[in-house]
Amino acid sequence: MKIEVSAPSNIALIKYMGKIDTAGNRPTNSSFSFTLDELRTFVEIEKTGDKEGQDDWQPLSGPGFAPFEMSENGKIRFLRHFQSLKKELGLNGSYVVRSANNFPSDCGLASSASSFAALTLAVSKLAQESGRETPSRFELAEVSRKGSGSSCRSFFAPWALWTPTGIRPLDLPVQNLRHSVVVVTSAKKKVSSSEAHRRVVTSPLFTGRPERAEARLADLLAAFREKDWEQAYQICWSEFWDMHALFETSKPAFGYIEPGTIEVLQTIREIWQSEKDGPIVTMDAGANVHLLFRDNQTELQKKIHSFFHPKYSCFSSGAMTTSGQG
Image (tube, rainbow, N blue to C red; front, top):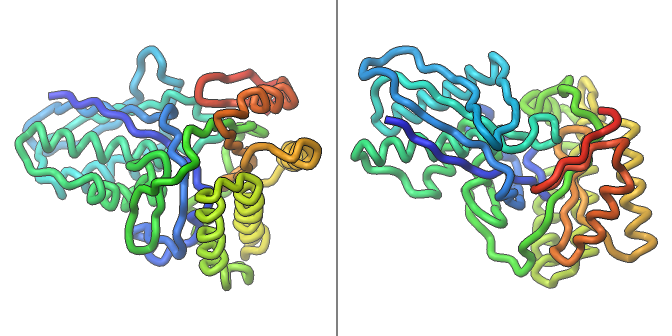
């Protein structure tokens, strides 16, 4: 028996950073994300034996898949979640799990959200085809959260809201957005996102962080409902800088901002100042800059790509321009 499924990535505008419960990935504040439906992880599960044995992970190869290799710690974490899902859904036997992304691993998109969402959906489909009752999509999102917190947001599109009490989709009048990421560096992060979650609570700025995030969330949802794009841009700008300030003031302090990051952010800010319009800007725990454009900003998206290419890669849902450095 072989199962194949996929799940999308997502980009948070109100950030998930800090946990109430480390083991269960319960957040200290709500987060809000846009689903990147074309950027996906594909998972294939094949049964290799009826008896319980050692499950294995392998890269999935084929047309459309980017080269991908998982670290040993990544494999352990991924297979641990797989085994937890097997137990929860009453599946027996040994399996090989194969996965790959249709976006480059160095393009600035964290793949843990799409990877764990796809794995959870694949095991659910496997259980369903084995005649077992399977959880609802909401329940699966909660199960997936235990493997990767941000993965629960990948179960809903185009907008997902994850609060400390649960995950749900949101219906907003702003849809059909176009996503780009300016890849300042493709180097591996010195401080992982998991370690960042642990360290930020030591920052003096973490006091009041949940309240600030919740206030920005309310303001951002209001801006989107009123279709106030500039206000949404300003809120998202403040939010990602708030998160990066936590990194810089943690004990020990760390950071992801590179000189190229500042160059990109300054250019985008100048575009907003000169044209009175521009993309929404955000950053994850990394050096690369994510941009969201309205569907009537196609020419602006191309213009911004041309500003940065070939010095930096500009990756969007359908195109990759190669970088002169990184």
